[in-house]
Image (tube, rainbow over the protein chains, first blue to last red):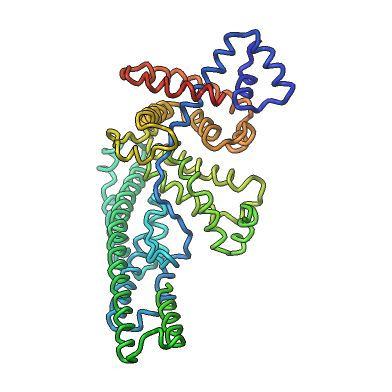
Amino acid sequence: MCNNELLLGYLYDELSPSERETFNEHLASCAECRDEVAGLRGTRTHLMSWAPPEPDLGFEMVRGPRAAAAPVRWWGLSPAWGMAAAAMLTVAASAAIANVEVRFGRDEGVVVRTGWNRSTDTVQAQATQAGASSSDLKRVEARMQDLERQLAARPAVVAANTTASATGRMSDAEIVRLVRQTVGESEQRQSSELAQKILQVSRDTEVARRADFDRLLATYRLQQGTSFDASPRQQGALESLRRVSLQR
Amino acid sequence: MMSDEELVDRSRGGDLDSFNQLVLRWERPIYALAYRVIGREEDARDVAQETFLRAFRALSGFKGQAKFSSWLYRITLNLCRDWIRRERRTPIAQMPEGVDLVELAGEAVGTETVDELVSRKELGRAVAKAMALLPEEQRTAIILKEYHGLTFQEIADLLDCPLSTVKTRLYQGLTVLRRQLQQADSGPATARGSTITTMQPRVARNS
């Protein structure tokens, strides 16, 4: 007698030895099941040709946007770097509000991530956590409160425009939710653009920093009037300075 | 190499590097799972990212009652379900326009000719389409079985349903796929007969 569960177990090699024996005996006498097994094996082989894309994922958990400011000491070395540092801190602060994660990775330079969460609720929760000091957030809040006031003032109109709920109060809630969602989506868009800008600034800064350091080394060599080979100790010191400066 | 469980223990003690090792180990399978369930690259990436974020936050609640990977899979599937509910639509696998032969030639593996590769790509697209048409439960069961190698019991545990239900879903899903893919083979592009001749010897070899 044909048994689909056994057939499936046979197909995926998940039968006990005795079940396997039983099913083998059945297969010997049942052309229908033989055909089924062969057909489904073919289907399984077909399934293997569906490969997912292989994007460069590189996910990494980081401790949060504040990590961007702390460990970067080399910015103090030259006025130009200092200015870049100040600019980056400003951007990083905005990024914290806009649900963007920024950090300086050990090997890959500045890492910027956006859209950890597309859920509007979470975006708003995180925005709220970013603090009331944000003027952006205050503006958004003020706008929403304004909208809520307007909606509360006109319950009849709202109720007339909705079929979803029985009371005007619930319609308000529904519309406020939609407004929040729209605001959330707009924030998400902004955060994505911001991330692009941050990335650009960080690349520019990185290039400038390396060039400046090379110039610094060249100047030092000129002043010393000697080659690195002549002084292993100095060379070691400079190399270690270079390494330290390149660490982020 | 440290086991997942050891890395989980360390992560729980606040060791971010250990958690990032787990991320590195599992980001591809998790992304692949999300991609195959919801069919959209960008959204699958978001789901995968969110999976690790949630896993990290909930790490203290993970008591090792299941494998770490199963736990991750469960989070991913929940997020995929949320996504499907939110989007209120059947996932549709992205179908890239045309086939870039140069790019394909670079991807050719072993003795596979470009012709064979084109056939495989086409077949892959046919599979993606057929999978997208399956009901979510059947699709999920097949994905976990075929692409992640879980046992029937592991799938049942993961989806909180009886073993027999898992088998039924798998069998029904496979049966539908078999029919769909046979149609795809004998469908409009009769030239794709080459696909059949390419695939069949492999079936024979693999079985």
